[in-house]
Length: 218
Ligand SMILES: Cc1cc2nc3c(=O)[nH]c(=O)nc-3n(C[C@H](O)[C@H](O)[C@H](O)COP(=O)(O)O)c2cc1C
Image 1 (cartoon, rainbow, N blue to C red):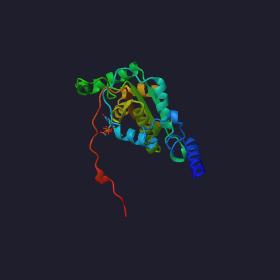
Image 2: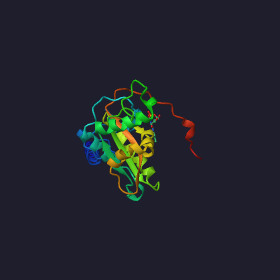
Image 3: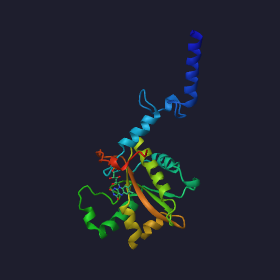
Image 4: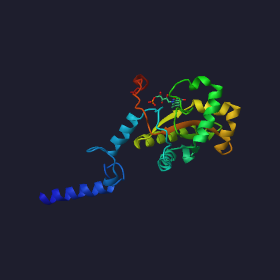
């Protein structure tokens, strides 16, 4: 009886060692970030459920090591036939962000009327631009890439906001063209969206979700 128990215990420990900290990942116990008594799945769900769009940041850009990790998580998103139909550009140059914002404000002065306005990327000091093939292929894949980055960032204490409107300006205003040019996108690629990143200076509340949009089908 005792021998059986010991065997079972050893097997359980070995299984845990083989399969990782929570039985669902291959992390070792020491690198596990799961909450006490929880699993890595809990941490993922907590990250998803607590992420909010951040629009107020500390002034400093996100350190490049963290950004490297974030984009690495981005490009590990799934893509159709692993086609990876994206081009990712990270901008943490204040000169770039402020220069473009100056043009934006010149054409839409009302945008800067809010006293909290710092720049056209909802005040983010680091911006990631995502481009996809201009025939529309890849937009879904880029969405997955974007969400991977935002969730990875949030799990590291870094806020983000997905941004469509600044890209609208960049693609339509001729004076913004030199800034688009500087992104050095591959031929046949078109800017799809921007994501602002930074160290949060606010804690936004969750917005209501409409659960009637989801149904089980019998
Ligand atoms: C495709 C897309 C475009 C967005 N564009 C903007 C934008 O231009 N400006 C902005 O402030 N937020 C933008 N957002 C953020 C949404 O407003 C935000 O995700 C939504 O209100 C839900 O809030 P939450 O992210 O805090 O849960 C965008 C989000 C997505 C997915």
